[in-house]
Structures are given as C-alpha cells and as structure tokens.
Length: 531
Image (cartoon, rainbow, N blue to C red):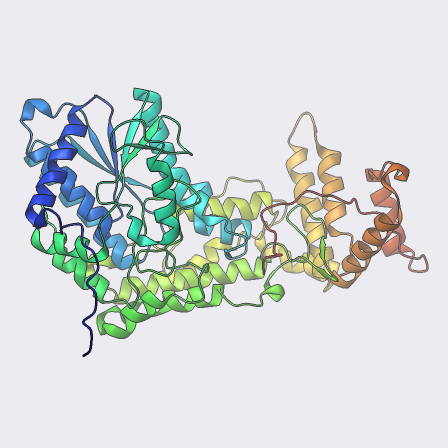
C-alpha cells in the first residue's frame, strides 16, 4: 500500500488559524504597551514582511486610541536598482499605507530609505569603476542595504536610548537562519525579544519566526490587508517568477543575499543568472519592456572582463596573483559604455513600460551629477563626455548644471592632444592628468600637495604598457622573496627617482629599464582577484 505524504507541520496546528492569529495579536499588543521604546518594522513588500506588518497593524487597531502612545516606524530600503515591478509595488504600497494609517489614527509612519548618492550602485560602478560585484567581492550589500537601514535605526537609538526592530524572519527560511535565531533565543533579555549583535541597544521581535511558507500564504489569503492593498496581487507577483523568496530588511552581513529572487536588485551579479526577471518576461508579454535591463545585467556578469578593466589598481599600483596582474577598475571606455547602455534602457522603459512603472528612474540626476564629478575631477577626464552620452541616448538635453570646474582643455581640443601624444593611451592619460593638476594648482595661492600629486601621476603613468608593468611587478616580487626583511632598506621612492626613471625610459632609449615605481601593500575595493 502506497503511503501518503507527510504533511509539513503548521504553526496553526495547536490552536487553529483563528486562535493562533488572535494569540499573536494579543502578544504584540502586550509588547507594545510594555514600555515607551519606539518600534521599527522592516517592510520589503514581500510576503513575510507583509504578514508581520498586518499583525502589527491589527494589534494597534485593536487598542484604544489613548493606548497608542509610541510611534511605529515602517522602513523600506530601496537600493535604487530594485526590480522595477516590485519597486513600483512597494512605493505605491507605502503611499497607500500612509494615507490609511492617518485615516485610522494609527501612530504608524512609513519611510522609504535610499543609499547616499556616493554609495549608490551606479556611482560606484560607472563613476568610480568598481567591477560588478561577486561573492568574494561584494561591495554592494553594505552600501545599498545595510547602511541606510542601520543609520535610521541608530538614529532611533540615539534619540530614545533603545529601539525594537520587528522583522519577518522565519526559521524555515534556511538551516543557517534557524541556527542563528535559535542561538539568539538563549540571549533574550526580555520575553520574546532577542539582541542584535550589530546594533547595540536594539532588540528584535520576530512574531512569525515559527511559520512555514504555507502558513504565511494561508494568513495573507484569509486575513484582509488592513491598509487596502491586494494580497492576491502579491501572490500573482510571486507566481510570475520561478523562484520563491523575498529580500528581507538587511541589517548585517549574515543576512543571505536575495539576488536570485524577484525581490532583489535587477543588476545583481552575485548569482549565475536572474531567473526571476527572465521568468517574469517569459511568463508575461506585458513585461517584455524589461528585456534591456536583463541584457545589461547579463553584460555585467560576463565571466571574463579583463579587457574592460585597467591593469593598475585604483591607487596606480600593479599587484600580482600568480603570474597575472590583478585587474583594477573599469577603463574609461567601459564606464562610458555602461552609462550608454543604462540610459538607452531608461529611454526604452519610458517608451514601452506600463504607466505604473514608466516613471521609475533607472539612474537619478543626482547620481549622474556625481558620476560626472568623479570623471572630471577625480579621474581627470576633462573631456566631460557624460552630457553628450546622455543627449545621444535619451534624445533630450542634459538636465544637469553647467560644470563650474576650470578645465585645462575643452573637449574640442582633446583630439589635438591625442595627436600630439600619439596612440599610446597610457601616455595620453599621464599628460592629461598632469595638465589637470597644473590647472587646479594654478589658482591656489599656496600650492600644498603639488609635488605629491605630480609624483602620484608619474608613478601611475610611466609604464610602456601592461606587459612592462607586469614584468616590473614580477621582478619586484622576486627581489622581495630573495631578500630577508631585516636586510631590506628604505624602499620609498621620491619624485626625483620617478622623474629620472621616466626621462631615462622615454628619452634615452638605449638605457635599460629601471624599476622606479613605488611598491604598495594597500588593497583597495577594486580588487579583482575574485574574478
């Protein structure tokens, strides 16, 4: 006789659905009334956070108005590269929620959090040239997710001395999550409240910690959304993708990435492929407008991108991994191409997306202005190509301000400079940087840092090519390996050494190459070893 499958244990088994929900609402009310510590509810718009917020909302609604004495802050972190469908869903949800809370006289205040403009995905990738994130080089999570939410929570703690964080984390999500939550249970300082190791004076309340996926959906389908949103539409969004999951509020690096779920970033390269966006496009013809986004994401995820990246690190040094140099940031041409593709995708979205999402900006004007500043001021790319790229891709004037920097040369004279320097891109970059340094120092009454800037530029740009730089790096490494640390003299290189080496290198072709570039052990975020 064939045995029947064993039904998974439900959190509703003991007291039934109604009894369990009523018990959780009463428990939430007791915790809310126990003190004056403000609450912060993490809301991603996904199923788990929606279920928790409904429980909190219903608990507040069941109290007398005079008992609702402390605020409940609902925070939703928008990385600015969220899946546009979900971003529009969450943004509209927050607007509806705010209006409904005001009508019901509930002390519930929604907040949409975003990363600082200097921390956004595109400012770092297109502006600074950071390579696309990888599991061993995940520069995005801290900047896009952790910092915005943690900053808000720490502000609450500073203002009130303590905060209670209400999350939709569940033990059934993964074995690792279950182990972490169980370990924290033993450290609970109050009934049902666990400490947070990364946020001092912040306690965590997880009302649905013992619920399964089926329990969550059962609750959402049977309990009407109290702020007037549609849980059935939420279920439809989940059904539109092949992978189940959501992006939780991320407050520490142990929270698993949600990049392979629909509720992750559309630019995420921490997974092999974005199955959810591909499934959305495949399952719904009305979502074909997202194809350029998927194409751009897949271009970012190409396994071999050395040809797009500088052989030098951001600080100008050359570092080796075995017999090969570690690639550094994206080259100027690659960064310009990423911007071009992104703006073309934005133009496509505006022309083809439905009304509810076509207003979403894939990149904001503030990000464009910061990218432009990084290119012109910090990278000395005074060609100032960003406005022209914008006009060509968007078919409209660039809306940014007039650049107030005093550029040493206008864009129209760059070709002349290239002709004078020759076809060598390294020498062009060196001359361009030296001209830029001179121009910026000219207007200063006191030229502090001039020699340091010149030295840095010469160290960065005096190589013949990548092969020459690699040969020198290998030679340095071999020399260090043969020399005992106690015998090593001062290896610092001053400006005179660099200039002498540069002159011998490029004016006296009969002189052998001399290794004059400074060695550094500094590791910056452009590390490409994980590639």
